[in-house]
Image (cartoon, helix red, strand yellow):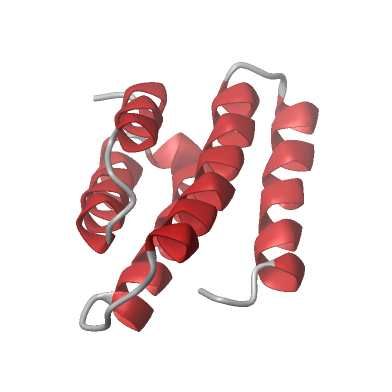
Length: 108
């Protein structure tokens, strides 16, 4: 399965922790299958994994889950775009995602 397919499936599923768990496991599997692009899959994968670790055993509101999912969907869109780009643009887009996750996402 390709990253665009994984990202699309995540976008179309419910916003619960199970969707985040499936997503990060598939992203991490893809790292092994496509090591050249592993860093592109790692950043959104680790964000999803962090969400699961923080909230899997807690009750969260639908609004919070939807907001968190929207963030990851946005990250995934940039990674999909990066995969279709030249190396310089690929690195720029990955850096955008990494910076946004580190400095703007405080909940997971």
